[in-house]
Image (cartoon, rainbow, N blue to C red; front, top):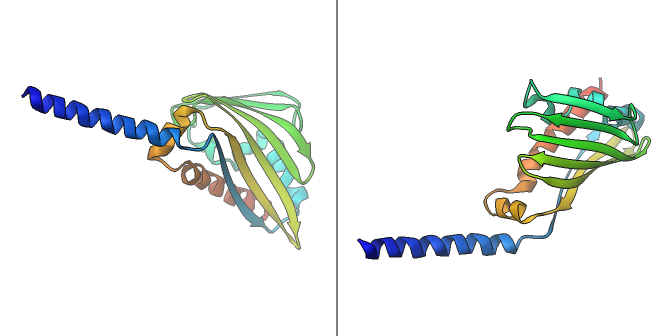
Length: 178
């Protein structure tokens, strides 16, 4: 019986070591980008992103917790606007602040997550006119802490976050093309 316990312990130790080694080989940063062509001028799309109060109409994260507490601070919109949230396990808690707003082409947002995992990232939205449409790109990037690298051994962050970005861009498209 002791021999079986030792074998199981060794196999478990090897499995843990393999996971830790795989996590250590992951990149120190991550980047997720999605884009959509929206049949509307950038001047119609930009205000939907530049005003955190309007995110409830298109952001896929806004519907995950109907009881989520939201607070707005700083400027009403644009540079200096702040949005904080505190919700259930599906949304956690965090804070966003618009650091740069170049109407109608670019927004840079400082994105801080506090729970369930701490993270400090940057989100960028760019709007590039393409004939009668606008190519909208949503990117999030930042450092990959060891916990993030460990999670990446088991799940694809690009796929997981990218799906949400695709939904958000589709919602923006629907709103802007009305």
